[in-house]
Length: 255
Length: 204
Image (cartoon, rainbow over all chains, first blue to last red; front, top):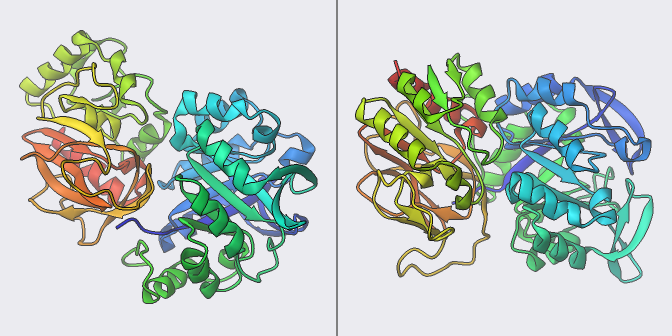
């Protein structure tokens, strides 16, 4: 049976892992390769390296960081933040990314999704959607949550899947950094609308929040950052908690 | 040296990095005749079966030659599907045909009911060993590997492990020195490295 995936997000700026609260007020949390190694030993299923400020600052993904992680950690690795062209994606893939995550660039140029899928296969294309409940619907925001695109998250997820996205990385702006739990209503709405896997993100504060997003939220995977960064053995303990709750997860022996 | 065949089906960086990590010596042959020097052959790949069109009859003959010379062959994901006779994903394109049957879309095998599962099958899933396996030697029960695919190889006497996503499908095949894995060992943490080490050891 397919396991629910637990994904650690390394929000990276200038080669260091940081974690924002509502995309602002960044705090230091560690060296990306060291964190990746620790998470891998504890049984994390996948890593996302995200340049949290790249879109605003128009900087490209840090190939050196990706290389350092990919050299010794052999689990799926996605890279996002400021990937706006095939050339940006090439650089990330060449550095060792298995998947590229695109957000604002996909909204501005939706054909980029299909172009990337044609180049690397759909399995390599993650469309990241930042959404917020507003005026009775889930509105899609661009540029690190600062610009309301006027689009509906469910409708945009459907379009992304049709255009060749392999997965949807869905972040609740309302919950991001709050530790109040994932937005299960948002996650379920998108997961029910598309046939590709949906990764829920934003709001993880307790292990029960993961149970909720895998049951009520019908997520295929859940992504978090700070809940893993600051506690020893958080990944292993989380998986044990999920297994006890009857959720299928990959356990790593000896960790 | 092990030949890692690059036919432009996906990115080889991850496979190269994982093999380098375990100390395997490999190169990417520029032409099929170079396979004569190979101690083993790996056919990686991800994506559409149509991409295997780049492996023409000359490549087919060269790979068959390495099998005849008792050199181990490992197909990964799309590379595993290519070992069979063909695929419904690109029906007119022949596979290598060293294993019997044709690949079909997951959930459409035989009379099996299609359960409500997401296609593509993406993520970690269990390898259920059904026969002794040289690739999985040293693996624990309940071991999981990372998959990302929509098509599966047919059941055959080469099947040594099954994985279930809605319906069971062969996830590891072995016949003589011909091996195939539907998952990505280069992305399957310790289990994946174990599979690669087991294969590399057979290449001598």
